[in-house]
Amino acid sequence: MQSIGWTLIMKRGCFCSRETLNINGSRYRVKERLAQGGFSLIDLAENTTTHRCYAIKRITCHSIEDQNIALREIENCRKIDSENVIRVVDYELIGQADIVINTTSKLLIVLPYYKHGSLSDHLQMRARKQDHMPEAQILQIFLGICEGLRAIHETKPVPLAHRDLKTANICLSDTFEPIIVDLGSMTEARLQICGQTDAQRLQDEAEERSSIVYRAPELFTVKTYCTIDERTDIWSLGCVLYAMCYFNSPFDPIYERGDSVALAVLSGNVNIPEDSIYTEDMHELIKYMLRIDPMERPFIYSIIEQTHDLIQKLEGRV
Image (tube, rainbow, N blue to C red; front, side, top):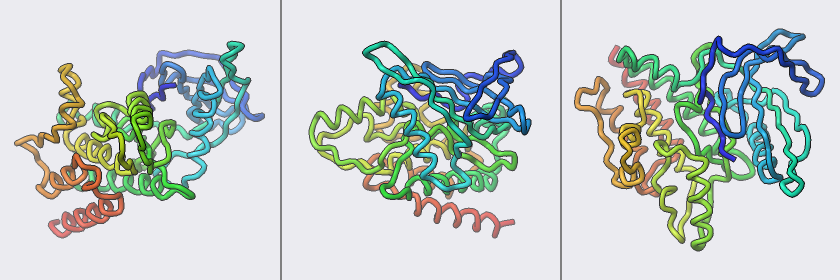
């Protein structure tokens, strides 16, 4: 079951509905379609009692496996305590999925609504005017993303990895704080791959759940015997920082041309524009995360430390 990005399809102002949803005794009036994918959709809805707006995610489950994966998203949300990671307000499972007798279930998840949309939306708006964010602003937003990712990587009893970190899965709060969303691809971070079956299973999961232009190189061709850990997210984080500077992942142009993203990623060539307005320190931070060998890639703590250092360095120049 493919998870959908937070803002895959925007239909502001063109979706009219009188539909109401009852979730654990609370009633919500659907106002607008925010996003839609193969098996799930997200609507903007208003609680009819409090008049507060929420995003309600509806996931259709066609099998017990689908249902368990969908419920895992809620379980994962509840394990993480961070202002920079989305929280579940409420949820209800309706029906029971059974592939044998061809029945489906529907999971309704009530989530906070972020009127500013995603970081991807914000960058696309800036791209139209070639309006680059100041380096100091980028680093402050990026630090919040890092703090959310640290909370995910520190989850107990076992660390988790997001596995689909990208600008479309980072929302912006009313105060422009970044919020990591769409935890449906999140899984146990540290995996021992022992044999071809394990390797192929992980590779197939990555193809289904991890966006290709943000996917770590070790997930394109999984080695038969290896260790995978949370540093898959650090690669994606490097692509996010690059996009914050230059509006797109470094591998978006390759994808748009129809060339092989896998070959481009595995080559390790990341093009920093010659006319970049950012400091060499920023370039080095991006390259630090985009190391092909995951064992040479830093953990999130090192990235947070370096980001703090860059912020202090910039403040010293003012």
